[in-house]
Structure formats: C-alpha cells, structure tokens
Image (tube, rainbow, N blue to C red):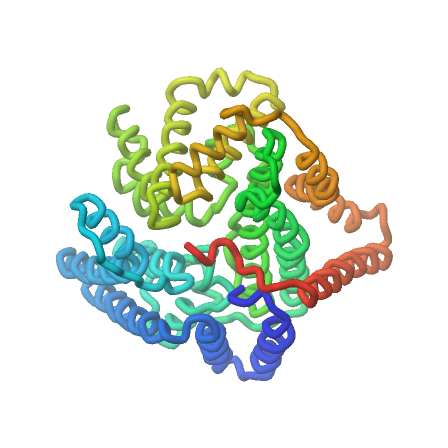
Length: 470
C-alpha cells in the first residue's frame, strides 16, 4: 500500500468501503476512481495529471484502433503512439538520471546535476497500459468503449503502486459487474490480513537484521553473519512483495475485482527456471508475451534463442532499476537459464530433490546480493565476505547473537514460504472438523494476526514497501 500506517488502515479503507457499498451500481466505478485518486494523491499528488493524461491518450488510441480494425497501417500507428508515449514517460522519469550520469562519466563531464523524482508505481502503470494497447492492436481483447470504465481500470488503487500487473482482459467483465458479495468480502479480508501479516510481522522484522548487516553496524563481521544478513534480505524481499500482492489481491476481491496471482511459493523451487515461473508471475508473463515471443521465443535457431533470453533478462533487470547492478542481475539469471536449458538441465532433473533445491536457493540468494547493492564494489565485497575472503572468520560472537535473536522469525519465515500453512487451512475446512469449529479457529487466527499487526504498527516507524522504489 502507499501507506504502512494506521491512517491508511483505519480511515481510507473503511470510508471507501462504506461509500462503495451504498453507491448505486452505475456509480461504483466512480467511487473506485475517486478513491484511487485520493490514494495516489496522498503519496504523489503532483503526478496525478501525468497519469490522467496518459489514460486519456491510451483510451483514444484504443478507440481509434477499434475504429480502424481493418486498416493495419492505421491500427499499428495508434498502437505505437500509445506504447511509445508510455515508454517515454517511463524512460524520462526512471532513466534520465541514469543516462545523463553515465554520459557525463564517460566523457569526463562534471557539475551536471539532474534529479528527476521517480513517480511511485510508474513501472507498473505504464506496463499495464502498454499491455492494453498491444492486446487491442492484436485483437486479443476489445477496446473499452467507456472512458469511465477505462479510467477505473488504469487507476485501480489496490495495485497502482506496486502491482501485480493487471491486464485489461483480466478485469474486463469486472468493470461492468463488480458488486460486493459476502463471499468476496470474506475471502478478500482474509487475503488482505495474510498479506499484512507477511509485511508487518515477518518482512519488517527480518529487515531489521538486514539493515544492520548491510550498513555494517553489527560490529565485527563473519562468514555466518554475512549469510544471516543475506538470508534475512531473501526473506524480507519475498514477504514484503508477496505481502503487498496479497493485500492488493485481497482488497480488489473485497470490491469485486479478481486479480491474477503474483507468487506461488517460489522458494520451494528446484531449478532457477521453476523459480521464475513462481516469482513475480505477472511481470514474467508480461515479458514473455510482449517481448520474448515477439522476438521469436524458442522457435528459432539456438544462437537466436540465446540472444532472445539475454535481451529479455537485460530488460527485466533494467526494469527493476536504473543502475548497472540491476542489468547485471538480469544477465546473471540469463546465463543460468541458458545453462539449465542447454547444458545441465537434464542432469539437474535426475538429481535428488533436496540437491536441486539447495542449488536453486544458493543461486537465488547470491542474486539478491547483486540486486541490493547498486555499487558493484559493494557487491564484490559482500560476496567475498560470504565466502571467507580477506580473512573473514567463519563465526564469531556477533553472528551467534544475531542467530539466536532472530531464530524464531527465521523459523516462521521458512515455514510460511512453503505450502504447509495452506494445507493446515485446508485441514480446518475438511470434514475432520465441524464447520462451526473450523470457522471459530480460522477467525481466531486472522484476528490474532490483525491485532498483532496493529500493535506492531503503533509502536514502529514507517516501513515502506521495497518495490515502491521500482
């Protein structure tokens, strides 16, 4: 959410919920639009005109593509106008500083100051609009005839800040009929509370350890402490981002919208290929459908297929941030995916499951070091510490202190990164427990999680979601 605060929880959502519930069916989208504008304006009011102008332009281009359905040249022209407009906004706000900085460094130019502020959610919002333009151009979805509905789609507040990337075809029917139901309300609130718990109770707590380790404020370092730190970040980024996705999906469900899943237990994967089928699913699907397949996918020669993978993953890394470490991070995964595809993939499949899981998590954990540190020197230094370089001791008192201090949260983080809790929920809903017992048991769990989150938030400082920076 744009706020991790009591104000957001106790004022914005209840007020919007009440207004939405009492509004006539024809005005429900208007309530959603107004609520989404307030939500976005609270954090970035100065960028509201940009977002609104893009929505007008994208809507007009969609209508013109539909009007010229039988004219390929004009249809392509309007598609390109929409796509290039969104890309221009994304590039200007997100990458101008990067390009200017590298240009100046390359030619030894000094005293050039560029400080363009990145609008929150711009990466997700522009990708969503681009998907709409391309889908209408291809004819895989109809254009939205009502600007009223289209504006509701592009501004849906649950996901406007940090995803998941919602395609128009996913919510097309919901835009016309998204009345509130008791089932949606119940399921949505449960999903929201789970996401809130992930963020507040797990991500924020393991993040405290990572903050200390990454800032060097723990005192003397050791190999164990380096690994504890990056394990903390490994859990933090998962629970932070998947928690946001759960909250977004849950809130959307409350208001009658169904979003695609964005995570599917990625840390149980047994190959890096599988990991990327489970992590940030909507982004992976976006690059597959709008970049990878148009480039030729795997239906081409081996050299071209390898090139396609490098292009897609370089762009995936660059999408995450305007820094060389993100590009390196993307290329790192490109190399691994190519190796799994063409070199040792079949050998890996024959290995025991626990070996494949260790292999996958080792590579993923190393990748988060590259992902976090924008300074490549810091990446090298941290990796060196993880593997005992420069005389770093294997273990010390500091490492043991942090290990015992964070043992419970590490155990919980490991447990909830697996499907086991979900199976326990299924058990409560099975015939082994009476419906009444199951209801009270589940309700008690959700109440405990929610109350614990509120208590934690009251006594903590503001902790923004990690993916706000992207």
